[in-house]
Length: 141
Image (tube, rainbow, N blue to C red; front, side, top):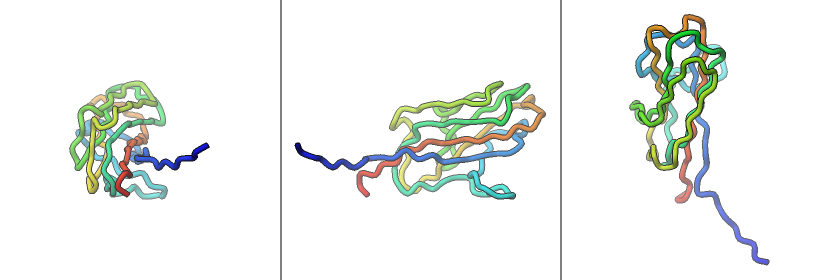
């Protein structure tokens, strides 16, 4: 019997973002990086040390909205990629799997999340957490 050693050529990494009390009438608002603590983060993205591609996005609200619509999408360098955008109306959970290499990034790119809400978005407090799933390429490491 021959034993072979394999090394993973990539790793899926979750990048976490959040916004408390999502307000109405936001347009392409950058979500801050999620942190534990009493004050919100001012950091609006993760700088990637490796090349790769965005392979998924998932969003969770603490309660369903009673009105309006929220859109959530991945951004690279502050520009939202339309193929990653999800619309959320009354759901509390939503996700989108994205085929590998459809949304590529290079080392040094800043990955983030942008949201938009319409004027009728729920007046109740809704907290949002978004995970961006990045496949980082480790072949040359």
